[in-house]
Length: 276
Image 1: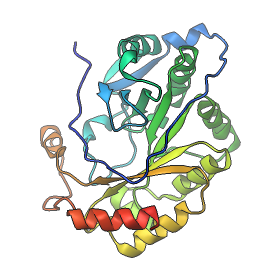
Image 2: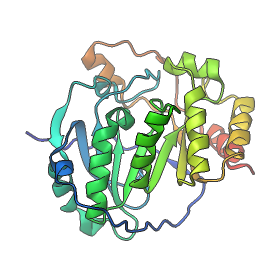
Image 3: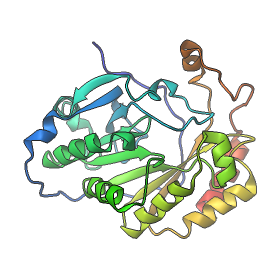
């Protein structure tokens, strides 16, 4: 069975570029990590826009949000996909280590990877034993600030070098309209990540008529200014490359007729979110 599914290329507007170096952690051996299994949608062997350097990307199953512009609806069901062990994934990833250079490694995306947080901890802990850089691409929607969850989340953060965090919308009501969920816990998570000093790259999907309001963009920048750990902001122009997946799954695509943003619209959003 071929588990490698090369995603359609994503157009990314980089606003800043920050050299990244990652510390090597001394991690005690835990033989149970290597055999822990997770639900995997696909693997990408040569990901160039999913964190620092060239990366091996793991797309996990499961997501609670229903973003209107989601281009991977096939990742929503958490009980779908292929069951793979930590060892299987990292053994395959290490075949591509020569391409990673100083800053590459693995990135776990989805779906929403934090829905499989115990698997992530085992994966990243074993990755650190192998001196592999770790990155999570997440909307942080599962985040809770109760003590039990925070203990688990902070354990994961101890094995995580950097996060790519999606801000879907700064306004709570508009966020719920766009994704089906409120954003209050997402904002709390971003503040927590700032408090613990965990490096974050922000990703913002620019959708004409939905996420391009000038005042909303300014409010997003104002929020980012309250955080001390934001190293980069990426603008991801909306595209329709995933529409065929909705058709194949028999799902309605709710942004029919919405066109990608123009170059001028991308430049305007970039200028605001960069704060210049």
